[in-house]
Image (tube, rainbow, N blue to C red; front, top):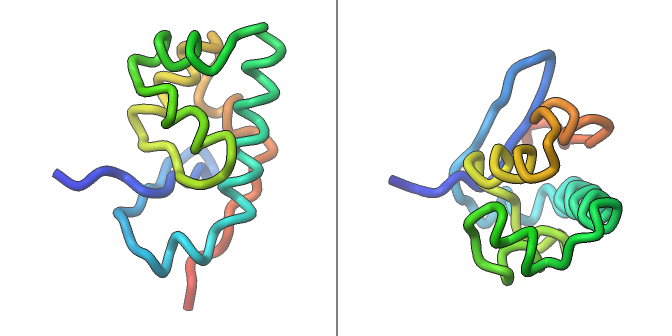
Length: 103
């Protein structure tokens, strides 16, 4: 099974796409925006990247790369992050701007 590359939340629906180098180049601003939100929430909760990674059962490097906007979180990671912060997925994705599908 391929890992999920990008996650979109629109009108109460979650859309996801599989890996593509073209997509990675098309969405850097949105990945950075999501990463900044994760970092902000982590700092608000006074968690280290290591502590957050442990709560989500993922590698610390994954948290670092998400926060830096280098990679998109897979669907399972998004759900784990929401659970770690004790918020809903919709709250986690609130105010995140997602790019339109390339033509």
